[in-house]
Amino acid sequence: MVNIDKNLEAGMNLLSEGKKIDQGLKLINKSAKKGTTKGKSYFEVGKVIREGVPGLEPNVEESRKYYDAAVTHFFREPCDSMDHRELGDYFYYGLGTEPVDKNHALEFYDLAAKDGDEIAKERAAQIRKELSSGSAVSAPVLSPDTVAKEEVKPAAEETKPVEEAKPVAEEAKPVEEAKPVEEAKPVVAVVPEVKEAPVVSEVEKPAKITNVDVKAVVDADQLLLKALRLIYYPTSSDADKKDGLEFAKTASDNGSIRASTFVGYLFEGETDVVAKDIKEAKKYFERAVDKGGCVAEYCLGLLYLDAENDFADEKKGQDLITDSAKKGCAYALCYLGDGYREKVTDPKNLDIAYQYYCLAGERGYGLAYHNMGEIDASRQDSDLAQMHEKNAIENGYNPDTEYQNPLFNNLHI
Image (tube, rainbow, N blue to C red; front, side):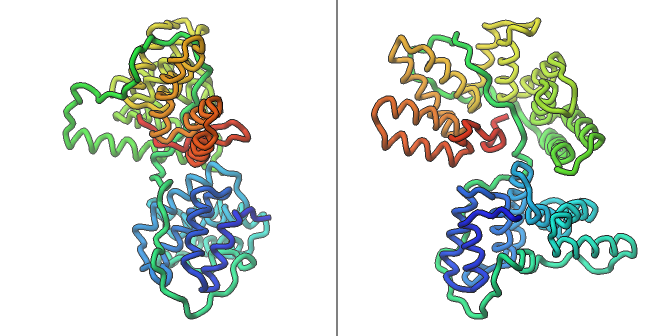
């Protein structure tokens, strides 16, 4: 059974009928921003831009970032046969920034075929034929048959021009920006005394960066991207994950702050990729902090605040988190807000907490908006509370499960 957001399905049907194109695009945009099947939504946005519709010229290069965003959502959400087929299309046709990879495409087509997807079954057979006998045909342009026949009606020939047909790209981010980082741990009540409103300051004396440095870091981050995909592909084996870990370590050795932060996160023991090793986690976080990583600084601060660690140091932990917040880390800002919110004996502390949450929310952290909404509600300001709760949902917070998607916001690392 295919799970598809209602707005997306309605928008796709309108486009396929060639009627009310503008309305169809708006529905697809709405599903991409707030829908329940964002992977499919972003994939459809990419398809619209790649192939064009009346009023919107095709733009293959522009479409790639939407296909990339679709893949990141596919990896976060439970996948059905349509998701797996579209993942196969991504690699078979080279739709995003990743090169054509028929082996990966075959893996996803086979998963879709197992669930009865006939289109995926045909494409899997074609790949096996190409892999065994070779093919002189270049990757074809994605055609309308990408969408399951039972879900899309035949397109009409004539359509009206569209005035505003360009999809909104509010959430689309490059794949490499999406990487797991642990959520904020329970609040430690002791926080630094602050008499004035918190301010996120600029980093003093920024390091001089040369073109050689930039190229090295870019290359290291590309290696990290390969590591992330090896570790988080739905079809990855344990051996693939171990290879991914080695790639991430190498990327860290080559200067990637993101890689050092990510490897530190893995060694904290929150995943099945590697055995828990707090000292190794500390080492990699410290390596990232030395290069200016503020998320790593926050994570390192949490390690120092954990009384079970033999190097625990409450003051050092608080100092690290405060410094991370000053550099703009959303997690650290929200953490400090939690600390002041706990100190309810002084009403001024609630105002300070609110300002910290505001700073974190502005950086795309949905949980911070939710916390602001709770404070608004306690102050009898229901309109403001509803607005902030809406912002929370739009920034990856699920009020039903009280879960903040750790991949959602743009990490300051």
